[in-house]
Image (cartoon, rainbow, N blue to C red; front, side, top):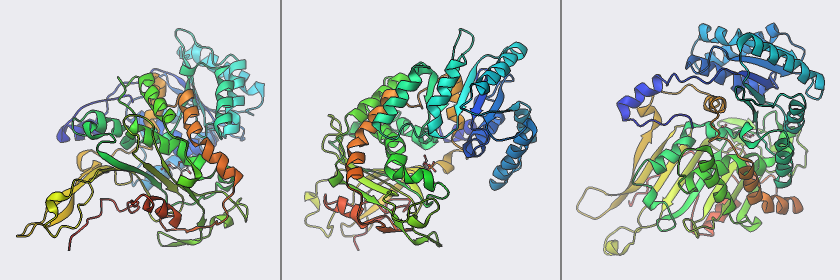
Length: 525
Ligand code: BG6
């Protein structure tokens, strides 16, 4: 988290339009997987936005490393086409000055990640850079399939490229997925920690690049009104939802060996869980924050299959479009047992949360796209209303809308005007767009910038990643032992399997409707 400013609405608008001009130190960014999708869709647009915000120093440059047969020119051209389409989609025009600033600094290196020669050629280019521009800092970005993480880092080490000095840092950004389970995450950590020290490794979880996720800590700890209520004394339960309206698209091969639990839970959903449930860190210092997250993951009870539901989508209609069932997606087995939906209840065994259920769910091809956290407070005592027509008191729910329609709302009870005592559920709503200028970002800007300034707060530490895998490992094992027999069990475009509703109904609770935006009103009519 690089910037923390306080503001009132009028000031906030100005602050969002005029970001601080603090520049990252000059560095070379070497992108492995530079011809791939991630580089095109996220890394390069984020760099372009950083240029526009004045965050990159003159000595910044990029070396794209990939196996595909390209030249500097053809690589730049393919990125230019992509950027033009990207900017057009946002109904804008490319900022030629910023884009040419960036493309001038791009160079392509064709190379096989498995061949030592690729690394010795990269070393030669980096030495040249150092001689010519006096820039020795290097950020290696591994935008590659996870099977390359370990081998590429080993090769970097062997070529002497990870060695730091007083005037030169060497850092590595590792993308998701970090491991496939606890054992593989441990093995990968052990492998890369032989080459790099922990403070050189930046494990990305792109959810932490989202402003609304970063805002959770501000909401909790920069306000006096929430934290005193933030515990089992006042909170009935918490729901965390990441619902998607996309299917597996062209990622069938990856998804078949991954599934919704691995793809979304120990990483993205647990980041939301950590932000909402961790103890207050003593500062924004990377280790202070990450230690609290790790402690929280260690306090999670093992998740039992009896408290979990898995689902796979059948054919259906999503946002008005007919779509096929998962088993007919490209590269998916016709009898696939892979889950595209998961919901479960978990408990956190500490003084703050013991006894408070956390219900988490995520799935592909659901009825609406929404990521949100709903904190439901305990019911007020009813006695006062016994003699009235009020049958029940609507719940107080604090709803944090992570995306889209970013903001938050608080629902509470109000007396409906009139002679009788009648109660209505009403809400207060905060929408980012009402207070802040829209940020045209892809979510990777802060992450890349933070890495360049050496701030690891928003990145995963080795023990945090392992603690998260540990919390889901029993469920992974149980599901692997007993494949689901009822797939497909939800229609694309629905709210997920019915069993997920029963999971909460058992506890006398219900999921909030997906994508309803604001708390539904309960009227006593
Ligand atoms: C990725 C998962 O990490 O996150 C995808 O692999 C998922 O399956 C995506 O769709 C969700 O991210 P976002 O930012 O679109 O909510």
